[in-house]
Image (cartoon, one colour):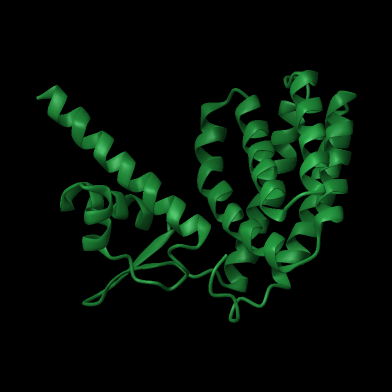
Length: 219
């Protein structure tokens, strides 16, 4: 019985992660229908784990159900962006202040070097390091409640990050904002790091609010 339950949970998690990645990378675009049959065939699994995964994604507001029509990838509106940044503005400066005394300087130097390296390469590489950095800061608090709360915020922010790095020339600004945060963290200036995070979020909000969401079909 336990073995069957574990297998079912693994299949659901596999479906959940696959659908989420497809949404993040734009293979499933905002407003596009989530085709259960296609996912079943692609993953080689049954209907139940796919439906359970979609149920979790709907709870997280990543997908939405339209009665008598189906399940669709949730669109991102300017109101959604504003709401997201209201939460980030409250949440992330507090997180970085807690994490600053705890994060290894070697890890911070690794992030600094990788930000600098990716800035001269591609927006996608920069977006990847950016996502890792913000997630690592949350995990460095060693607070499981913070980590759990951060995940849905992180994912929606990843969607925006993929859009903004691809369509707007902000690489140098993104780099400089993160380098200031890292420098403050390296000197263990927790309040300074929190201030730098607020400045970074203010810039990110401005970039995100300037996106022409109606014209963007893929991330």
